[in-house]
Length: 256
Image 1 (tube, helix red, strand yellow):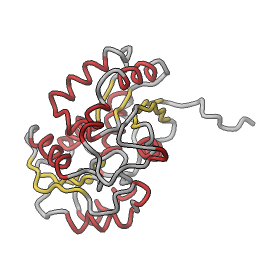
Image 2 (spheres, one colour; image 1 turned 180 degrees about the vertical axis):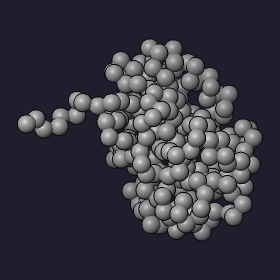
Image 3 (spheres, one colour; image 1 turned 90 degrees about the vertical axis):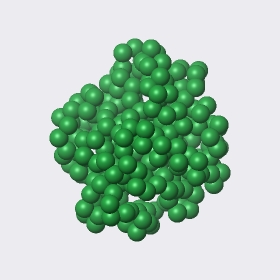
Image 4 (cartoon, one colour; image 1 turned 180 degrees about the horizontal axis):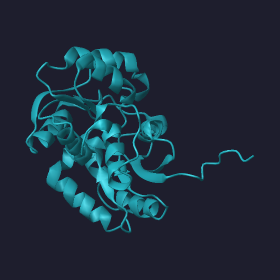
C-alpha cells in the first residue's frame, strides 16, 4: 500500500565534500548496498567555482585550507548531529598534502567535534584497503587536475607507509570533471598500468572512476581501488562490516 519514502534504512553514512563537487556523493550512493543512504555536508574549497568549475590544475593552498579549522570542524559537528553512523572525508588530496602524521592529527581534532561518530579519511582508507588485498607494489593514477607536485605528494604518502610505488602520474584525459568518460578512463589505465604493479589506486574523490573497476579487474587481473570505493568500504567496515555491495571490485570479497 505504502510507497518507499526513504525512511526505512539500515545505515546512514555522512560524507564531507568540497562545496561544488557532486562526484563523491554520486559515486558513494551508486555503490551503496540496499538500505544504505549517503548524506553529504559541504566544506568550502577555494579551487572550485560555480557549477564545479576548476582551473586545469588545482593549487596546493586551497587543498591545505580545506582541512583547516573552522569550516571543516563546524561541518563535522553539524553532520554528526544527524543520525549518521560514520563520517567520511571525500578529499584524497588533503591526505596527500598533510601526510600521514598531519592526517592523523586532523582526524583526532575532528573527532572532538563529532560527538563520538567515527571520522575516516580517504587516504587512510586506501592504505588499509591496499593491505587487505595484499598489495605492496602499487600504481597510482591521479586526476588530470592534479599537478606534478600534488601527484608526487601522493606517491610519498604511500611510500611513507612502506608501499612500493612503481608508477604514478596524473591521468592524461581532459582536466574537467564533466569530460571524464568511463570508456576513455578504462583505456588510459589499461595502457599505463605496469606489469609489476600488484594493484592500482585511482585517487581523487571527484574523479569519475567507480564504473570502470570491474572491467579493469577483468582486463588487468589485479585489484583496482578508487577513492570513493575505499572510503565506502572503510565506512561500512567501521559501522556495518557485513553490509557490502555485490559488485565494484574484489576489495569487497577480501578477508579483513
